[in-house]
Amino acid sequence: MKYEGIIFDLDGVICHTDEYHYQAWKTLADKLGIYFDREINNRLRGVSRMASLEIILECYEGAPLTDEQKEQYATEKNDVYKKLLGNMSEKDLSKEVADTLNALRAKGLKLAIGSSSKNAPYILERIGLGNFFDAVSDGNNITHSKPDPEVFVKAAEFLGLPAEKCMVVEDAEAGIDAAIAGHMDSAAIGDAVGCGKATCNLTTFADLLKEVEE
Ligand code: B16
Ligand code: MG
Image (cartoon, rainbow, N blue to C red; front, side, top):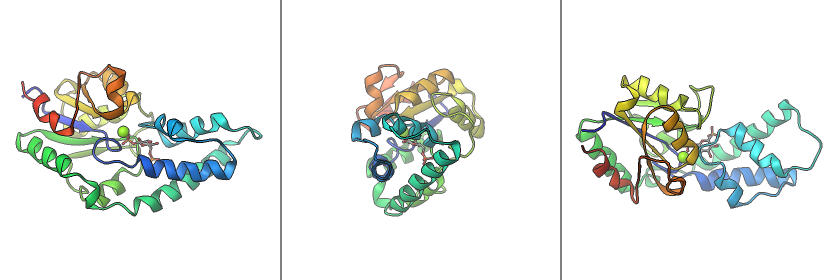
């Protein structure tokens, strides 16, 4: 086997919460009179909550905001987002993803999450994967967000594996850059395919089964 561990990004790879992020940021943007659309939302993939707010504020024309106000707006967005996450259930985990994860584990690979989200444990619980992964590294245990490699370096540490034995699966260019910075191979899926920087590109999640073989 080429790898001993696979580190999965959560949002956009294991499940899809981007529509909920969009709705929650849109609620805040409308309140502040800021222009916000799905194209801007696309730039928030893999980006931390506070860095996402800064991107949204690029279109803000009011008086400069204090750090306290920014914290408050980020919290408001997260409150709306968390309520929307309450709609998620095991139905939000596709059969293809569930079957592929089980097949990878059956090959003896260790499986981890490497997500920027502070809501990762709650999302995993909602989709029925609360106790599935061998390690979870997320927005709660890092000080630097993707493209910094910290979240993946920590995931490899939690698995007890060296970076060169791990592959990262990502849907965001920031995540592919983080894998490269952490000296890990990467598989791009969805939006990240376009950046052309990953070790390999996946057309479907199940393609991963071919990529982990020697
Ligand atoms: P939270 P990932 C990322 O998750 C999302 O793609 C990104 O849109 C979000 O801003 C970030 O998590 C932080 O999320 O506000 O829940 O802490 O793709 O790294 O799994
Ligand atoms: Mg993602």
